Image (cartoon, rainbow, N blue to C red; front, side):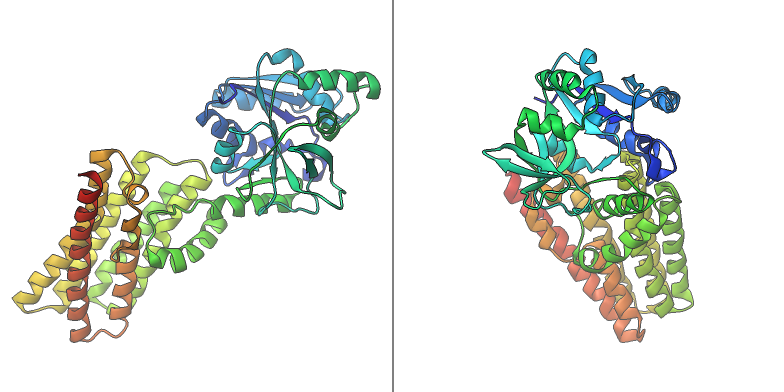
Length: 427
C-alpha cells in the first residue's frame, strides 16, 4: 500500500548553487520540489512535510500556497547539522508509514511509481543519470544495509535518496540525538537501522548539487520523455535522436503549445512549397516530422501533458498531411486515374491514425500497448513522411506517381491489418 505522507528534506543552504534553495531551482521550467510533490501526489501520496531552514522558510511557504499543495513546513533552526537531524524534526508530524525524499533530487515518473512499491532504502545497481563518483554507495548483506558512504571502495548499489519508512526510524534518530547532540548524517541513521534495501535499477533519477547538475537533470528528463510505443521505425532510429537534442536546447525556453504552433506552421509551409520546389517541400516536411516529437517531449519533461494538447496535436497533423498530399497531387498529376490513386493515398494516411485512435475510444486502451504486433506494421506517419522526402529529392513524374501508389498500398493495407489484428484480439 502506498504511504499517504511524504517527508522532504530541504534544509540545506545551497552554498554550491549561490545560496539558493535547491528545491526551488527549476529544471525544464518546473521547480524540483514541484516535480517531486506532483509525481508523488499522482501516485497516491496525499500529504507532505517539508523540513527547511529559517532563511528559506518564507520562500517555501509562498511556493506551497501558490501551488495549493497539502503541505506543512517544519523549520530546522540549525541547518548546519546533519540531515539526520532534519529527519528527526519531522517526528511529531508523522503517525504512519511514510516516504522520505531529498529536496534536491530529481526523479522520473517511472522511478517514483516503482519506488513507492518498495520498502526501506531504494537503491540503484545500474545508475544511468547520476555521477557515481559523487554518489553515496551502499553495501548490502542479506537484503539490508551493511555499509553506506561516498567513499566505499566495494559497493553493491547507489543510494537514490528515496526511502519508504515507518515510525520505527525515529527510535534510531532519538538515540543519535543524544549521542551526537543532534549533529549526524542520514547515512548514519540508515546504517544504524540496518534498513531493508529495494533495488530499482536504471530508472531516471539524479541529485542536483551544482549548476552543471541542473543541465544533466534536464537532459535526463528530455531523454526519458520519449513517447515510446507509438513510434515508427524512422522515429526510433532517426527522428528521436534529433528531436531530443532540440528539446534539450528548448526545454527552458519554449512551451509545448508554442512548439506545436511552430511545427504546424512549418508543416503547412512545406505543403505550399510543393507548388514551388518539390525537393525543398520534402525536406521541410521531414523537418516538421522531426519537430513533431518535440512538443510531446517538452510536455512530458515540463510536466505539462494534457489530453487536449494531444488531441489538438493529432488534429493539426492530419491537416498538414492532407494539405501536403492534396497540393502535391494538384501540382504534379494530370490523369484522372492518378487522381484516384492520390485520393486513396490521402484517405489511407488519415485512416492509419484513425484506426488506432478509434480503438482507444472503443476499448479504452492504447492500441500499441494492447496489440504489440501493430508496432511492426509499416506505414506510420514518420515512415510515410520520410519516404515522401526520399521520392521528392529527385522529382520526376514517375517518382511522384510511384510515391502515391506506394502510399496508397502501404496505408490501406496497414488499416486492413490493424482491423484484422484487433478483431483477432477482441473477438
